[in-house]
Structure formats: C-alpha cells, structure tokens
Amino acid sequence: MYWIIAVLVLLAFDVNYYVRFICTQLSLNISNLVHKKQLTDTVTSYGICTTQDIDIFLDHMNNVRFLRELDFARYHWFGRTNFWSKLRSRGASSVQGATSIRYRRMIGLFRPFRVETRLVWWDERSLYLEHRFVTLTDGFVRAVAISRQVAPGRFNMGELIEQFDECRVKPERPEEIGHWLEAIEVSSLKLRKER
Image: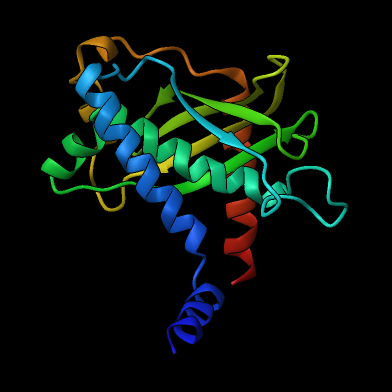
C-alpha cells in the first residue's frame, strides 16, 4: 500500500524540487552562522547537471532547468544577504517580474557548476540581479541571466535597498539593463493595444 502512495506522490509532485529546497535552506542556515553577505556581494550557489536535468538529446542541461536554477540562486541570495527578512519586516514581498537569459555553451551531463548572483541595479519598484552559470571544471561562463524582482503594490524597493550601508550610492544603470527595459516596455505597450 505504501508503495502505491509513494508512486502517486512521485507522479503528482516534483519531489526533487522540494528536496533541493530543503537542502538549500539547510545550506543557508549553516552559511549564515559563519558569515552573512552584503547586498553588493556575489552570492554563490552550486549545482550539477543530472539525468533529470537533461534535454531530449540526453547530453546537456535543458534550457528550462537553467531558469529553475535561477529560483534557487535568487532564494540563496535573498537568504544570504538577509534582504528577504528586511523586506518581510516591512510587510512587502518580491516576485519574479522578468528574466532574460543568454546561453553561451551547454552544461554537460554530470558537470558541476556554480551560479554567481549579484545585485547590479535597482529602481523604485524593482531590483535587478545578474546570474552567471560557471562550470567548475574550466571556469567558463556557460550562461548569463538578468532577473527583475518586483515588489507588488506601492512598496518602494529602492528606499529599502538604500538603507543598507553598502547601497547608499546607487550605481549607474548598466547599458544592457537599459535596453532590456526598453524592450519590456515595447512589449507591454503592444499587449495593451491588443486589449
């Protein structure tokens, strides 16, 4: 009887996702005992391409898995910098608003990698993180992603960020983020016209 329940759970839920989430949380708890990171620090999380991550050619990581790894990298960044706690203490939250990813080379089966996440810019509503997928064997940047974390409602994300000592001076907006935001705006206008 238990095996039937186990099979149903495996079919109905992505159990590995939850196991990975628990492992990430344990890693955060241990890491934060040793040293918390500043908002401007690069926060590194690790992964390995397994048989559950590969595409139909059975030799490299599926593009969708890169985006899934971004979830864990963001979670890791929010936890290591203590930004999530500060956000929640003000009754706010953050959701994924947009992502842009550029694939440079594949991550092969059983190849370990790290995701380096860092805060690159912010405005009133959003913060922008850069994520680099780097293989451990050769140090090559396999993919680069930018993610936009949005605070729903009228919460001013920029004011909160600038309360951190290391973020008192706002950096200049990176050129690629400027172009990306223009593309997002063009897309939004197009969709509004279709209504």
